[in-house]
Length: 302
Image (cartoon, rainbow, N blue to C red):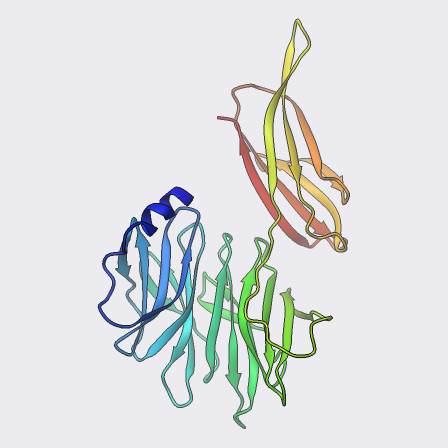
């Protein structure tokens, strides 16, 4: 992906519209980019492949794309607002350069941030207005298949969400501020219909951006030579990002469970393998309730 991205950055992107602004960009591991903003007063978004922009069809008129995201399957998520009085939020799922609008969003407000993971789970955040015009923080998970949302509303009154992120297993992180009397930072985890506010933040300020450090796994194929005979094995290691919540790991080879490991495990050796075989390993982290916290995969072999 890095080499492909460098090739794109070494020359201007062609195919862009001649007026407007780009407000958000994203790129996936295949080097496919997604950009968003506005042009001529209308929402604008385009995919970028090999330095060429292709405008996304299906967007309504009169508005602004404020945030874009794209996963490794090329599915995009874009959010923003229509220029109404008051503004009305929108979000679209993008597949093959065609946008499908997400239904059941609030009647007023703005989507300020979007994110999507490789499982096709999305999250959007911003704010909405109540009937008395008071502002309420808004966040929702996106069902890609039905183009609908499940709301986490209201989170807090007099708040807005500036930034959202989602990890590989669908846990979301949101950040923003309270606008009640003075700016106060706000952040929370969203999972399984629950809002878990993060404590210990500064008394004043604003959260402008959030992100997850995701779990990762590394591995290598090694050989034990016993003289007359030998055997091949894969040596695996991973990082623990959930020290307080983690209860166990489950390790799968080619979608088959091969080991259940304690929470303090950070490595595993898988023995008696063939030199020529290709193995896909997935390490899943679970809490005490059996809820999947995180996941990572690696392919070892030819």
